[in-house]
Image 1 (tube, protein in one colour):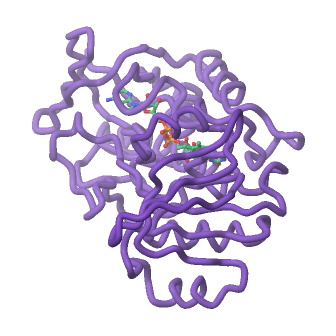
Image 2 (cartoon, rainbow, N blue to C red):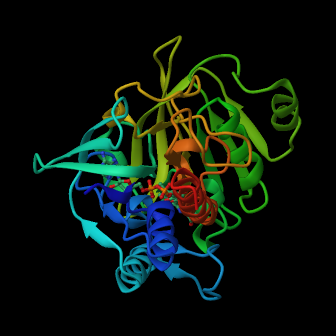
Image 3 (tube, protein in one colour):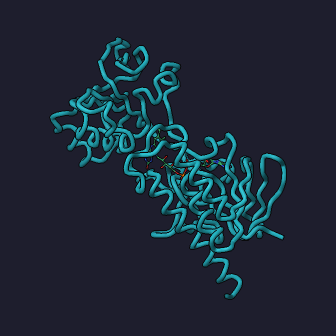
Length: 315
Ligand SMILES: Cc1cc2nc3c(=O)[nH]c(=O)nc-3n(C[C@H](O)[C@H](O)[C@H](O)COP(=O)(O)OP(=O)(O)OC[C@H]3O[C@@H](n4cnc5c(N)ncnc54)[C@H](O)[C@@H]3O)c2cc1C
């Protein structure tokens, strides 16, 4: 017998979908993931304090928040499998899902909530200072006390980088934007905002050669992409905004995606280009990429999957 609903991914989107689906008696099976596209629990497992998820006035550690969501999904009756999905065949129905343990599952409906991976600079010093001054999310971490009234840097030149820089001007004393080219890719409106902002200073034609510090980040060594010259700036926070990679390799191009690789969903819906397959969370969200938004869309996906199954069954 096919599963009624298979959920792929155990971040806030997948676990919220599992809680809703289990409580609707859909007996969902959830692939937590193992290593492809991040660890079980998703992106919040690699951060410290989450201060903007409602319900936790003092904040909550990312790992604790995800442990709570996981426990709630289990308590609700979801079946969790700690493995990666390697492949899914969307040309057959019920959908066929091949997992890491080489077992084939079939499913009447599927929610893809496999998240996205923030691209990171491939430097050893980046790993050393990750979470000690380096972050991939200014909206998430910019307000932390360690960054208040300090000189900060954003690395990147797209819309996200410029938005993050604007956001950081509320907290930092100065915000550098480090961009490897001599012009931005971002929209003209956004460019005007940062170019005229008194707290923002743009360092054109620069890449980060090394993150500097003892136990915490306290500076960056930069390399000029035109002259090859090195320079240093003192900053206590560096925010990488060099893009995200949606985790969709197991879909092998069977679903419609946008030009950045995010799964396309119908407006105000989690429906994808394939009937019976829904997408929730960061894997379909190039705009917000926040846990509460991912959780909200996981809830939507579970409700939409339930209604879709009922309509198919003529209920
Ligand atoms: C450093 C950092 C700090 C952040 N801080 C905050 C914050 O303070 N507040 C906030 O709201 N947001 C924060 N975010 C953003 C937030 O983490 C994401 O918006 C949220 O986790 C997205 O949830 P998701 O469920 O869509 O995907 P993810 O959390 O990315 O989870 C994806 C899941 O899919 C699984 N997976 C991937 N591929 C497969 C596969 N082939 N088979 C099976 N499973 C698979 C992964 O193992 C993972 O469990 C932060 C992000 C980062 C990187």
